[in-house]
Length: 508
Image (cartoon, rainbow, N blue to C red; front, side, top):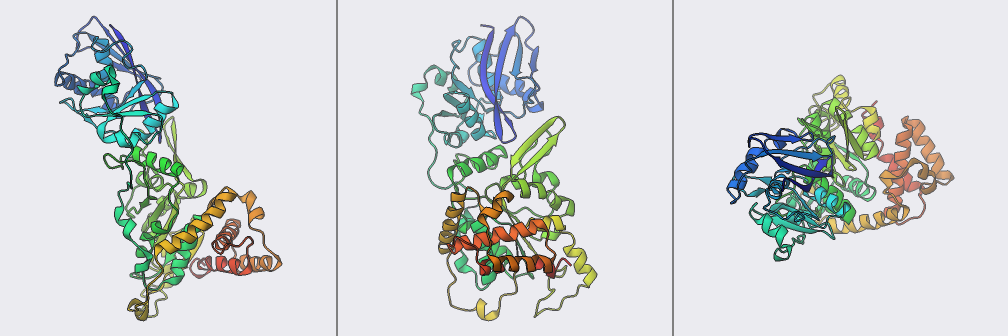
């Protein structure tokens, strides 16, 4: 046999595209090994890995010239996941596998020199691609099998060594398909144990976080060092609604492509919580990098929370990159002729001091900053970016009496119940309030005459933009949903306006 075909998949953004691997052998020198189809360096280096792994798995290397075509040729192929399908193609071309042995199979995996199969990125998108193209069987490294097995209707086989592959394709019945794991899978397990019960005082901030969780709103907390901003933020995932299956699949695909899943992991069960340092690069935050673009923190936080502590310490040009994902729920990365779109529908939670020294407005500590210093500090956050943050709340120092008090705070479970009820009402309308299209605001955020007067006075007095006007109405709708009210009352609206008061206090 001279020509043999196998199938694999190439990661493209957070999805995978079906790739045909055509292996042709013909008379010529063995060192004449040609690979075509836009392979990157890692793919071109596969010849040496395949040669050694075949020898160490009990197979010979062909003593002929070899050409491997990765089709379609206009898609760039990256990574070492093509090793396994190309090795299987070589075995088929040498006659070690029957002509139709790999019919109905898709394979992906990196080979070690000893023939063992190493884990890869993007096993879940590859499994989705196989199912979409009607392929019934998927061969992946054993560490990726549980991840890929979450796709229903697909038989996933996890292999440890290349020597197992011929036996699998010859007799699939002798191998047991992988099953998805039960229970939680998240690399931030510590966040699951954090509870609002442990937070003393800060009732206003807790209320703001509850509203943000109920409507999916972005939130900015301003307060002096040690007031509890970070502690409060880390407890936010504990009151968010549970991930729906579709949301879990989307989030897991992003983490899979980024190589963030632990071995033998299944679907993410908890909403992501990402907290990058303010020294992060552009590509680290929004995605990109050399070669094919990879997801950044805004995408890793998809369907979860992106927490930016010390908000003004982030370079302004990096903060401005947040404007597109905050508005559209996705980020587009352009690399040459390639344009990739990554999902990035996250809740932004930001925390900052009121001034460089941190004690502006603190009743117990003297601020050493001059007014120009304070203006330069808060001026690092642009008006357009601030407009996209729905809720602004001050977090003052905790009073000693509250800190040492014995009264227990409300637990996260009780808050989450109210959040779930509010989200249920929003699902019936088709959108979370934060993502409500502008054309539906008049339908779902109607005000009576008193409400119209209150809103008009607030917008005129505070000089708010049209975007801030819409966000006040969306927050008021969420407050009404938490109260299980069909209509927005004046008190709901007044509370929503209160969460924009920092527009006047700090940014004038």
